[in-house]
Length: 112
Image (cartoon, rainbow, N blue to C red; front, side, top):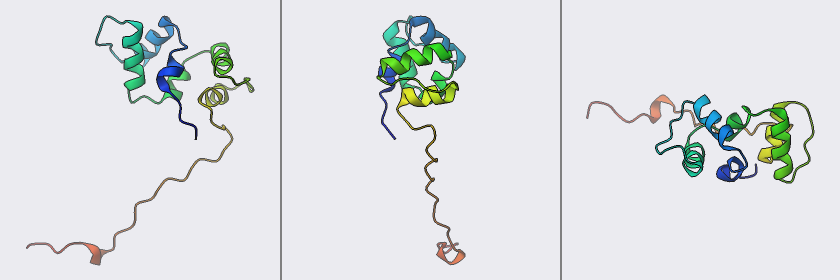
């Protein structure tokens, strides 16, 4: 998966779009709501970038694709968001790492 510069992608958005995303996720800027403050708030939040972008309209997502150097294809917002993020929307999900199973005899002795 490509590593995406969150702040770089969010930097393409207008102030009203940034404010709308912040309000939608109930994020409150610490400063007066300046552009840099909103970019810091959104890029530093734990909200996945894809979820933020899903709040944009299809035409706006198509514009972002073009800004990022990708020709937008598909009609679904999920596909457009994946193209903005530089990922293959049709790739199978990566398997999660499963923690090893501990057997009863692996437990440390109790009561000492």
